[in-house]
Length: 171
Image 1 (cartoon, rainbow, N blue to C red):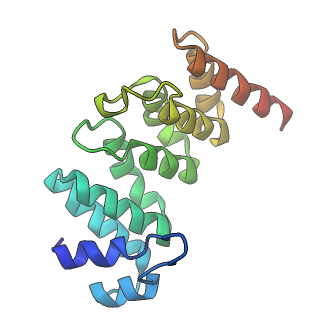
Image 2: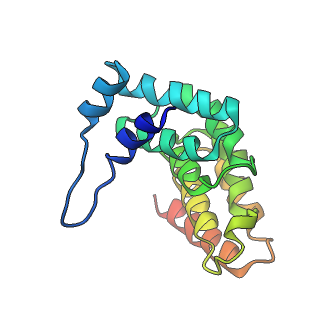
């Protein structure tokens, strides 16, 4: 991505009292694309291939803007355990959105792992997002992962897993 490409994507960000500088249509036009989902996937593949953490974050923003398909799954799973970027919470959100049993191991990993850059987060935001994703993922694999989290030493992880299991039981 060029610096201009990066600025166009950053322009999608909503700024209070100012709005957005760019629209999704502006991004498509800038990149000469007609399919935002395919554009997000291409940008994400490029960023992962180069292990560029900044560009992963920007590509994930494009993916969040235009949507995800199962074509994104492999990259999201790879990013879940990669320690060279700082977008794990966005990865958890994307895996949650895909709602597939193929994402369970990655979500489970994100539920107990604390990347160095999130060591300060006593509230365990990444874990909560991953556990919420497991709670929304259908199938016995997700339920089993939540049950395994009940044995984690971290109280926040245990309590959130317990809440998601209770929520699943109510469905």
